[in-house]
Image (cartoon, rainbow, N blue to C red; front, side, top):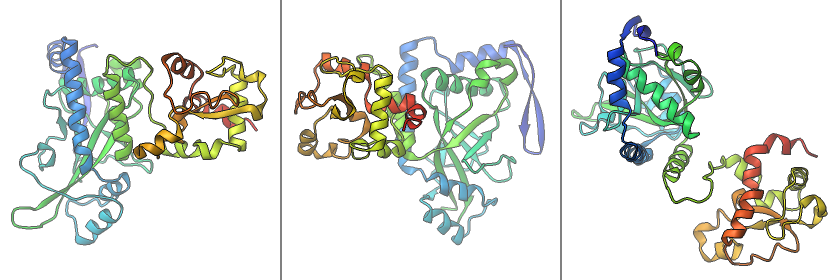
Length: 361
């Protein structure tokens, strides 16, 4: 990083912010902790706090409706429109900084190292929320705030998991003499963060690029981060398949279908093996390749909370028809589990090779 003047957007114009060597060193002490274990625990605490706030969140569609009102005052009909699209109106709460009408736009974690939320109020900036739910959020007018933005981007890039935060907007809406403001909150994730990594000096004062996401996606992402923190996990942690792909490639859709045959052909061409006997799938007739269940359907019937996962692509793998019943109602041994991981579940195949599989007829 080269010290110097950085220009940032402010309401009504621009501001020049001096970034000195001393300011950068001070910011590093605030944002980055040398004690790795203490930092890891702080990171987990941050995302656990964020997860606890997800039940308060509205849908991206309703948040966009709220954003597009272009007003600081919410009418009854505006409120009805937001609610009809899955929004929630949260009253002002003086015990929560997140739910207060304060000027500070960026809300931080208790340790002040990470961004918890960004607050938007009509009239402050001309930032646009596009049709895909993407927007830019300007940086604070200090070196530590800029450094914090870049650090959150770095975490997202290095962990391979989108950095999730909350987007907050608020309105005047009188419910009583004491309750005169309401908030609409939705999760968002950092996108396009590799530019800061490629040229940190040029991008140091760049805004955060954010995209609104659903509560489900936010919760899945946070759960993945929590899973990555487990030091005793012996196998690779996978991102959750989007619901669209999970439904499209479920057992009902791939068993005895053209889609399922295309996936088998791809696996044959890719040199995949039967996890049980080790025979190459290319040496097996297409009709003799079966879709096995890692957790059996009988187990899922016995423990009904698993029923909506029994036919999920991550519970399926390709195997010989003659080997398909070998697992039975047992769970995979470590040896078999390693073989399934090496060959890949159906979900694994879709994650890394969706476009190639779709091209096969």
